[in-house]
Length: 440
Image (cartoon, rainbow, N blue to C red; front, side, top):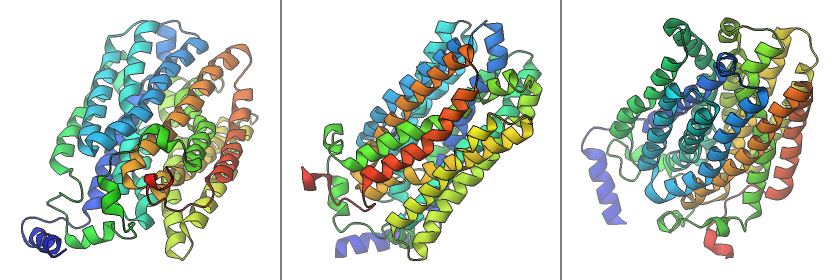
């Protein structure tokens, strides 16, 4: 103990220190998430143009998105294990190199098969962002700040969705065709990697971290945290023995398709149902995601606020998750209103609710499990999300070709209450499991 204290004192008294370093770290993860969504949405925003150029049906477009989701689903679990084994710094590096190269490769594809292939590789890379981000927040934030830390990085998805339509439409208008847009948006990840390798290290090793912030980060840690963190990451089989893991996996299976519906289909919905041209999509498709960003920050802040006011983690997380689930059925009304702006406002309510919901659900792996399991549990949750989204998004294409968007919007409105009921029924009380080995 004295040796550790001496080392900490030496670290504190020598070299450059940066107060609030954890906020800079999560800011970098926010930026990665924003780039992730710009790369992801380039195809979605340009879908009205690309489907016309390549003569693709709604079912074929749904198939392209399904290939992305298939890879995304596979990679969620694999990426979680990857981050637990090789660490956050190298894990993010692998993920971003893969997805950036795949994003740029879209510029050279002109067939259904080619687009499906590059979307598959894009999904392999992009999936790593979420288990990596969850693990980063678990390592760098105390329990009472984790939901807000999750909110900051998750707001990158919403803000990426806000800035993507005007940027992508503007680039396409400037160049006169869509291929160069993919090259420019895909290159952003390589610029981010420069900052990542300059700034990131673990809290235990970071030379810029003050002792005061190190103590704050370790607040409310399990007494056995040091031992748990040094243990080998648990296997999927070991983790799947826990009802808490199944609660997270199944909840995300039901509810994540709500987000993916609007990410993948909103521009085409606005074009085909509401009569928007590409310029109008650039003007208005981002509007619901402003609400999503507000939901991301509110959801993270509010559960932390309740915990600070004396609520238990269990009560705070469940209250906020239940509130969010009650908002998402607003999408049903969007199917029946005639005014396009009212429909966009109702979709905004849905996305606000989703981001409140997901920010707290994505915090659950670190609420339940020690740090050596967080990446893997987050990855398994993402796998459940990917399977549910893949089924729903592919089905959407067929339903739209044969019926309309109305059944899709109604079904999506029912998913959040169902998923939340499943989550609460299976998870039990939200509290830390001291060690994965404790019930083997």
